[in-house]
Length: 333
Image (cartoon, rainbow, N blue to C red; front, side):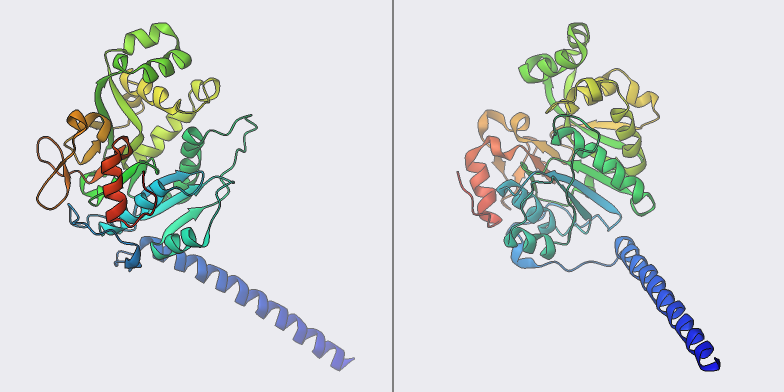
């Protein structure tokens, strides 16, 4: 009987010890991950994936600054986006949300590992909607992620992923107490697409009342994490988020909220920028389809400023081929 009691006590002690080791290890692993996300020390990346260009800025970011991307699959544009961003020396955290059908080849896995990209896989429809809309569902996954990591993030940059190029650390132009919206310097009424989106979501009266406003791009929003969380909640809470849940309809919703004062009413500070504030939209900022370069091979505006962020470069085939060349992206037009 005594030996059985001793054996029972020993087994109980062993079980408690194993459980203790498990929970302590789990906490330590979790703590280590948090330490990594909060670390201010530079991270070393695999430079075989770097582009060959001169960065337009000094590194202005830390791991507490986050770039938010969404992709439905591998594309040469996504490769260019990731390679160019890391080539600037940016130390930001890069989060890539991927749809369920994203196919991870061994090559893209090497890029993601070598450039230290945090991947959120299997971002699928969970609200019973009949269609999958990457343009809009990305905002919902961003909100979920930011709420989980709220204490670890200072600044964010929400951006499209397949048609953007970085030639400097974007956080050199991003403030931590406001949001920056990128204006495409043309009125809404000058673009048939934007007019149609407004009409489909809000009707003719609202469309006509907003026709003179400049187009604000929903694919490039940067600034304070707290202000961006407020913006995401405001957008997703709109009735039109449900009634107008279709591709590209995030843009009319954002424009409606900005130009009708609802963003400001929600306590969200913001500023607008165009072609010379570090953000550059090729379709609107390149005159007569002829991009300008300085002596360092950097794309510049007509005012000779060097943007950190270039959007819609794929509107110009020669520019696209040039960027793919300097970043060793294989696909060519």
